[in-house]
Image 1: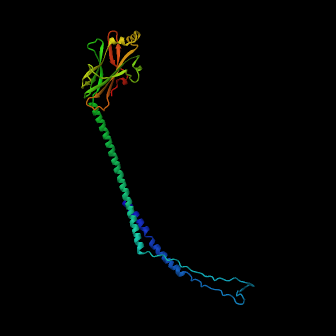
Image 2: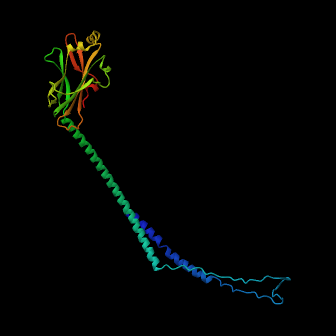
Image 3: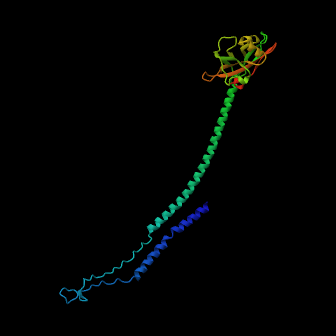
Length: 301
């Protein structure tokens, strides 16, 4: 880069020095031309002839027009002004400005390249910082989710009722949970694929005074629904439907949801939900109640 700059500087210096001999040559040629130029012809005046009353000469028997004198003027070539000290100083100043401008451009280009490299480095640092912040946010959300309560649903046989079952909710999280509402529904279907895509609940009730506790500490369980074999015949609309239940031609599904909040979280936080679905199996002597249904019927939030 330095050699290239010196070469350009030498070329500019050679170009700027060319006008001096050209001006001297032009001055010398002008002086020679002035020495070789012929002297101008003297002006001549034709006197009018004598012998006529009118004072005009005779041109072949006819009067001639007045003759105007012919004057030849020789204009000397303008002399070229010499290359004065002022011109030399102006030329040197122009040369210095050209050199300074050239090196200024090189410095500006180098500075812009450095700024571009620094900008790219800052962009990379900012991108890495954004990724780290996103990772920290995900870790914080994961930590908050691990510390929140999680209510899970299980089915247990009843100890007091034969062929009876209890739908149990258990807090498997790390903080206490407060149950704010529950909902349930009972329906008949040939198979779980015939259930509505979105669970439809008949009613949603607020949690109130009941044998089940409203607040569940970690590891604590409570029964939210009790069901027994003796209820099936009363739920069927006709003996024919009950016969289809006995022959497994039709199935009885019991599903619902539990709405709860984190006891130590602020009230502006959204509530959590745990959906559940069970299939009642009617046997000849014994019955069963198992977790079943599509994923949307067993979702957690």
